[in-house]
Image (cartoon, rainbow, N blue to C red; front, side, top):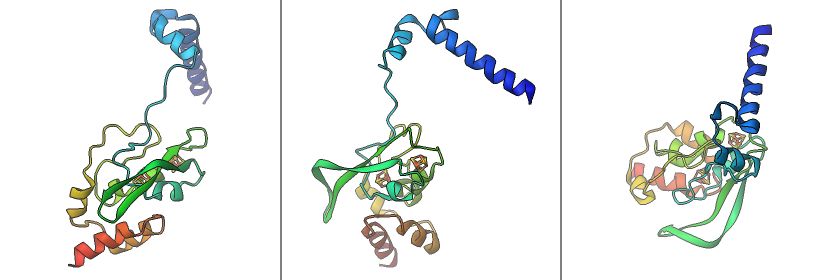
Length: 165
Ligand code: SF4
Ligand code: SF4
């Protein structure tokens, strides 16, 4: 345990030296200045375009770290389905539990890359219309569970209708 604490402290000290004094030149001067001036932007945590605005991530977050904000212009994703909001993830409130990611319908329902992630969403290029054509591959129980958290329950209805038709 003592060793473990020592390793952590040494690691913190080394990184501190690298950023503040550019020792070892691991962090170059340009990056060092960017960090100190607050110009290093955090990576995207929500893929706005692929997000369908269901608010599931916001409803499931245990720390209220995800806020749904109104879009200036609502987007019609498909007939009868208009996206009016998108989530914004507040890293200061996030405890990295990954519930938001696991509950995102793109991930949970469609098995595609989720559009929200506490660290980085990566590249998400899902075509919502095509996804809706895919059959549901999860159990009714899980569907019911997920449905509790979705603001737009029609997502589940559409999926189950397609499945039963
Ligand atoms: S990972 Fe963060 S934002 Fe996502 S549900 Fe957990 S606390 Fe909320
Ligand atoms: S759960 Fe996924 S699709 Fe729904 S609002 Fe959050 S990021 Fe968007």
